[in-house]
Image (cartoon, rainbow, N blue to C red; front, side, top):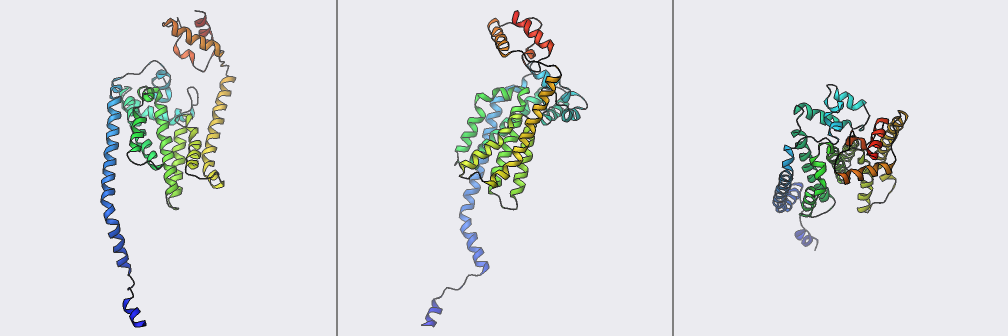
Length: 318
């Protein structure tokens, strides 16, 4: 009886045989995976082409007189020979955005002050952001081709025209680029191995800081992380709070710096006209459709010095 059992017993598989069986099982799925990746690559290339076709005309556009002088070609943090040092030491109006101004400075030098490179980079950044939106949608569980459709809707929606076509609004597409890249790095870090997870979280934090140094609206990233973790079914435990603590600390520091600059402007004597006067000024301008004398559009925006207040008062009486 024992001999019969030994005769029918299955011999144990060696390491080579086990490895061979694993390869054979994985072989049928490798070709479809490669084909799917190739198709996904063509989808994203098509999306970038659609963005370039939709916004290609802005490459022939010029600077505009609304905020471009203050933000770009009249800003010493962009045009001065020591612009890179100024951007990291000067926090005056329109704000402390060194990453934004450093990129402006490189474009200013590379294009000899011409606007075409500024517009081209805006379009390329927007196209990259669309790909990041699609990648993030895929990471959150949407099946193909839903991520591509989401990214296409986001990229071609007319709400983005101002941010892409206006050089001053570069801060929107730039901070969005770093914001989406940071969120994508965080999400992928959650699926990474224990050895690589700290690298993803460090990259996400660095990208988040770059986003904050491009526009203050990047402070919303910790809220987005909490929402994603809630969507995944994770509780707000101590571990999640520990992961979020660097983002919240950086948010708090940026808010305090902004409040300190506002206090310095108030101490310098800048004052703001009543909101009813500014609203009446805008309404009167819209009705008259002609510029009042001796008043520029920049007078509607802070900082409000005594000269601006007098000009706005004269405009209101005009």
